Length: 278
Ligand SMILES: [Zn+2]
Image 1 (cartoon, rainbow, N blue to C red):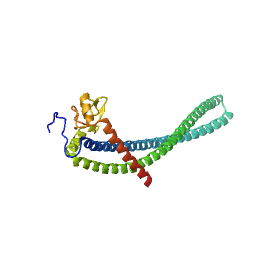
Image 2 (image 1 turned 180 degrees about the horizontal axis):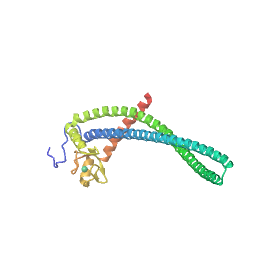
Image 3 (image 1 turned 30 degrees about the horizontal axis):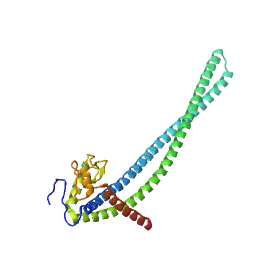
Image 4 (image 1 turned 90 degrees about the vertical axis):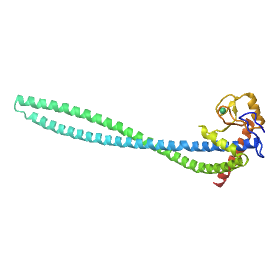
């Protein structure tokens, strides 16, 4: 049987084009779901890591705040001692003032008293400032502790979620891999060349899609316009056609939808069974 076009393949073996397309598209659908499952896992570990980093950062901040608080408290205590000493000195000088013998002595004591009173005032001002600073830092400490608690709770939730996702995706992944093995065997049985083409195309492209439908009269893989005549031929399912631009295998929407539906049912059944076991 001569082929009119390079992109057209003769029907080989016993299987019809429709059967072949069905089989190869099933592999594609399974592969797409495997990628999805991989993505599902992909974000959670990142979220957990970010939360752990954030909590660690807050602990470091808390440590620094506590150190600063200790330093301020020590400074406050020193200042309070200093004030007490100044007050004692003032008292002594006030006594001396009473016993002053000469006017000169009197003036000296009086000047000393004025200076001490000023020093005490300054010391009190400093004490007030330090007390205020300590209060502010205590508020910051409280805020940080609350934030740590909040994030810790969130982290525990995310870790639990991740654990269950890992457990669940592992089951689904294993199931999908088994399903894929069987689907690949089925394709190879009827058209090994088709399967090799599939793998070759799939590995070539980032989106890992080798079998595509049309999207608004364009190839669903590279978005190059496909002539209506070619679209019609694909829908007739009498030969396997590939995109002249990107080489991806074409499948009509109706057939693709059927295969997708079938796969969804299989997946639904699998999840039902898992839930049943748990
Ligand atoms: Zn294309």
